[in-house]
Image (cartoon, rainbow, N blue to C red; front, side, top):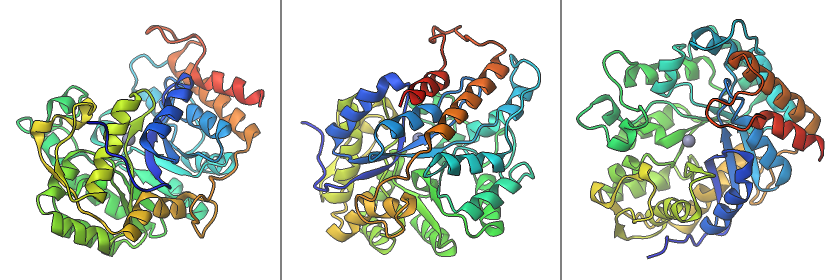
Length: 389
Ligand SMILES: [Zn+2]
């Protein structure tokens, strides 16, 4: 059986990852195969390679109606202190200054992963640390929305329960790692200090096993939203009581956004399967399992049963695109089809050159190629491509 298709014609995916710019056509093919008309590219920066943000800017520059960019932060200076191979001192703009540069470039929001336990394994800086404080103030002032990955499913703290696909990526945590409740407490403190922040918490904030708690969280924080990006455990958890799920989704229809975590290199069949599972869960009343085209992060059909919620059309329209359009678009009315903000190409070029220079400073070489990467970094390639536009 092919992937399940949505009936909706105006889908904005709030959570997509762009790989190298050579994936441009692959990602456009995925849009066509999944029926997704617009995408938010969540652009986590890898300061050591320069990857992440430049490629997303490239896609938005080339397809300005289709792609929003939520820029990740560059922690190069702090990273250089802990990376074993890093060469000496590296300087990066302050996080608050980075926010200003996102605004200057025409980014639509900010992507954060500072709150996933693996991030804490690399850079153990809580988001309540003074390092972040001027940043939070600035984000609140400029009013950019955030897509923020905090935490992971509770199973990841229990080696018996951690799925193999997660273990294979190093997503299994032990007693030496930060605790799930500590991460939630840190976020609560940030939201208390900065109540103006507009946040979409990725992966349902990993609260799908406890809808009453998710409900309290949304009630206490009126500017906070949840995305539906799997963790497949979210679908299984909510499918245990689809009626309660349906009630929750109708009650919080303005606060839930569609997302897939599709990545540009995954292939059209797997992408259509991934999006199709979420469409079918939201739109149909079917009982089903993940299909054979499902990517490895979704596990297998033996893992669980999904029960569709048959959500009403007006609720679906908000979840599929309306809410994220309102959150991200330059048009505050959030009209369907409202376009992403225009890019300032000169600012983007300067940013990409800066990112390339930071990566060089961290790696200590201009043509880093130990793993067969092209001699020119993605950041440098994008800067060159944008100069020609
Ligand atoms: Zn993601």
